[in-house]
Length: 125
Image (tube, rainbow, N blue to C red; front, side, top):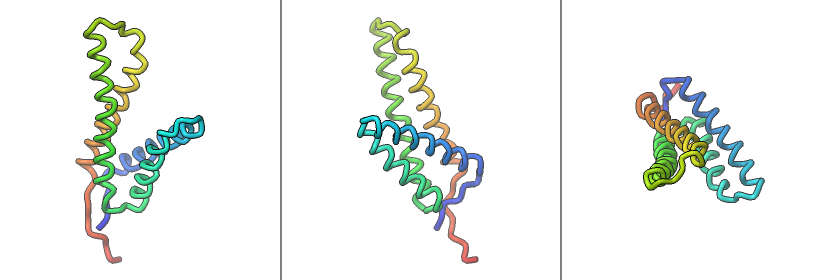
């Protein structure tokens, strides 16, 4: 069995996005943030599954997209609670926009993974 990507643009953009995240997180590890090492390992595993079109690639992308939505989603919720309690929004705008983008990317990846990625029998020829 193998993973089949019906939308080649999604496949290419997903690989490019994971590469960008890999570069960023590798930079974070080299600057002393060792928590970025967890993200580097996950991204390398995702790239391995994607390049080999492994049967677990769809499931891995699915869970990775959910995690990408949970983290920023909770951060957005926390910032909205802070604004509701009277904090100034001006200090949080950059972080809020960044979290909204990450949440949106996670949502898009989740949607396209669900609609355009399939598991099929590996052809013999």
